[in-house]
Amino acid sequence: MRPLRTSLTISLALLATGLSTNAQGQVGNIGRDVIGATSIGDRERTVIQDAVDNRRDALLSGDWSRYRGARDALLDTLTGRGVTVAYRQTLTEILLPVAEQIPQAGPSGESWPRMAPLRIAGDLATTTSVDRVVLPALAAPEPEVRYFALTVAGKVFQSMGASPAVAAPTARRLVEAAGLQLASAEDPLIAGAAAQALEVATRVSPDLVPGVATLAMGELGNGAASRIERHAGTFAAGEFEAVVRTAGILRNIMANRAAPVGLEQAVAATRLAAHLAALSIGVARADRDTAVTLATSAELLMGFATARANQQQTLQIAQSIRDGEFNDARIAVEQLVGAGGTLTREPFELDAIDLP
Image 1 (cartoon, rainbow, N blue to C red):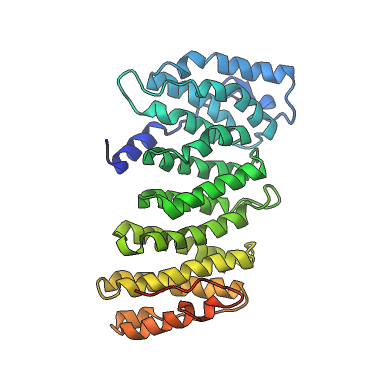
Image 2 (cartoon, rainbow, N blue to C red):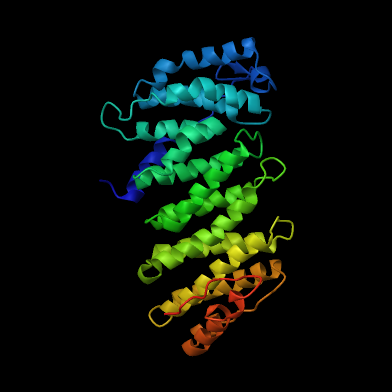
């Protein structure tokens, strides 16, 4: 079995896209009048069906070059402005069943065909493509499949800003699936990909797809906090990086006064800050530099998140750790998140954390 990083490099390189728009206002032999149609009649459906049928053999050939040319000709129709939900849905109805028939191994044993339906489903970005392909991939046992599914999820969330063709319940399930990977995936690369997908989801307009952005904020905070609880005693360097990056994403959201942050989202972010602070105490004596990084991240996130809950709390432990005053730092954290600490009471009501 290849190492995860090698498998991911191969998969992402092979699945990179091109652009094949021509000068006649057509993409993949589908006119812009069809791509921009608000309703799809028999004429538009025939045009889409013919475009897919003409490329069916190439899509199923198992030959990378032929497959990629056919794929890009069809998926490039989804780029640019003016792509309607009706067009996405109709292309999904016609193209997705073909994509699901792509042989799962190339003639020379290449791995790219395993990811091909997932790539196509992500670009289609419809309720059907997410339910049938993307969500199952996020539960796959293979880590490289879940990693790529998370990059695809980010593209799905991004598409919701232009032509939102994913129903809110399915979009929320996608957010929850990404949050589960952030909390529980064994490899920190997958956790990092989950955080990136969720960051994109926080930018989905509530006017277009209600509930997605706020749910994603909560998944970022609670997912990363749960990850610390699960892995705190065995964190590697990559683990620290993943949770600190997640805290940075949430800090920027909490600092943006225009972001739709409610008490639930502020509490989730506060929970992550509390676990980062506790983690910094746990590693301070063995790795002071890492502890300072964790403490600094905790301080910044704590300030912004508790302010959004209208109960701003100040945490100052990074300098104490830097100076080797570990007991002072520990006392400060215990006062906030230890038994009976400030953050265990309303409005936060966090579970007390036993410091190592």
